[in-house]
Image 1: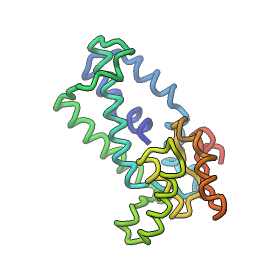
Image 2: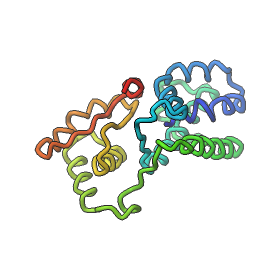
Image 3: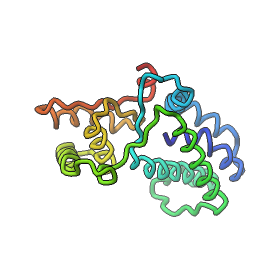
Image 4: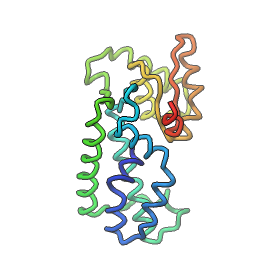
Length: 203
C-alpha cells in the first residue's frame, strides 16, 4: 500500500519540492511495479470476485514507510553517503512537505476505499471481537517465531482471527517466516499464506 501511495500521489511533488530529478519517479515506479499494479487493478475492479482487507494497524505502518522514503530523499539531496543512511537519525521534514504528505495520503486512502471490495479490518478491541482469542494467537506467534516483529505479529493475528486466506506483502524477511508461522498452528490446522504482490495479481 505504501509503494502505491508514494508512487501515485506523493513522490512527484516531493521530488519537485526538493529539486531532484524526475528520474526518481520513474525508477521508483519500475522497482515497485507489482505492488503498484496490484492496487491499480483493485481500484479498476479487476478482482470483483474477491475481497481485500486493510488492517487498521497498516495505516500507521504505511505512514511510517512513507516517512522513511522521504528521509532517504533528503539524505540523498544532502549528499549523505548511502553507507551512513541507517545511522543518520535526524532529518527534519519541512512544513510544506508534511502538509503535502498528509493531504495526499488522505486522498489516496479515500480513493482506495471507494471500492466496495476493499474493507477496513479493525483491531479486535475496537470491534469488540473475542479479545482473548486474538491475544492467544498473537502470543503464540510472537513467542513461537523468533524473528517476527510486534507489528507483523499484530497484523498476522488479525488475519488469522478474521479467517483471511492471504496476506500480501513485499517484505522479503516476513515471507521467509511463512512456514515458521504456520508451524506454530500446525496442530490447529490453521494456515495463512504470505504472498508477493506479483503472485496476488495472478490469483
